[in-house]
Image (tube, rainbow, N blue to C red; front, side):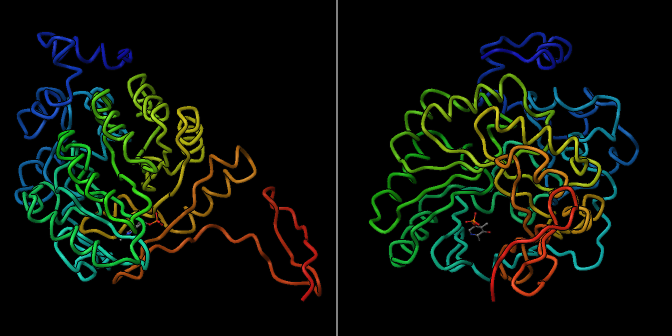
Length: 375
Ligand SMILES: *Cc1c(COP(=O)(O)O)cnc(C)c1O
C-alpha cells in the first residue's frame, strides 16, 4: 500500500525501528495499539483533562488507538477533531439529562446474547465486542472492549439458531465491536452459516476498520467476502482527515470486489458539524465509491453531551448539502430513539403546507415554490 505523507512522517518520528511489513500488518497494528497513559504520552502532548481522564477511566470504555490512526491526530492540539473522538477528556465523566448506558434499549430487544431484533425483517448480530479503536461517543460503550461478547462459537450458534427459527429475518447486519477484527476463517465461519439460511437474502457488515485499519483489507479477506454476495458494507467515517491514501486504496479494493459501501457518520460538535467539513467528507467518500448513507444524531450515551449538537443544527447541515452538491453526497439524517423505538429520519422539512391543489415547498435556496398535487 502507498503511504500517506502524514503516515510516513509519523512513522519515521515514532516508529522508525518498525519495518514497513510490520507496520502494514493489521495484526501488528492491533497488538501495538496505544492503550494507556504511558503510550499516549510518548506521542501526544496531553492536557490535564486528558491525562486525568485516561487515569480515571477504569472499567469504562477503554483507550485504544492503532499507530496508523494515531498518525492522523494532532500531537499538540487537544481540540483537533479526530483527537477529540479518540482521547478521552474529563467531560466524559459528566452525565447529563437523559443520558444512559443503553439509550436505544438494545438489551431489551435482544432475544439471545449478541442479537438485536428491533425491526420486523432485519436483525443486528453483534459478533464481537472488540474494536480496532474506541470512539469516545460509542453507542455500545456499555459492552465494547470488556470481554463480554468475545467471539465464542456457542454464542454465535444461539444467534444463528434464532435467525434460523425466524423466517421473517431476510437481512442480517453484522456489527459489534467490529466484525473485521475477526480472522478471515472466523468471519467466513459466520458468513457461510448465514448464507446457508434460505430466508437470509442480504448481508451487511458494519465496520470502522477500513477507516482506522485499512491494512486489514487484504486479498485474503476480499477472497472470503466475495463469496457471500450480496454483501454490503456500512463504514463508519467521521472526518475528511481520515481519507488517507491507505483508506482510498482499501475502499477501492472493496469496491472492486463488488461490495457496495455506505458511509455512516455520527454528527459531532466541533468535529464534523461544519458545512465545509461535512461536504468535504461526503464528496471524498463518493470518490472512493462509498455512498454517504446515514448521518446519525449522537446517541445519548453517558458522558457524550460535549459531542451532541441540536437536531436543528443537524437539519441545517443537511440543508447546506441538499441541492448545493451531488445528491449522492447527501446522507439521511437519523435519530435513534429511546426504548427500542428505532431510527427515525429527521431530515429538514421542505413541505410548507398546502395552497388548494398545490403543495407549498421551499427549494434548496430557501425560495418558495410549489407542486401541483390535487387533493
Ligand atoms: C440500524 C439498525 C438496523 C439497520 O437499519 P437500516 O435502517 O436498515 O440500516 C437493524 N437493526 C438495528 C437494531 C439497528 O439499530
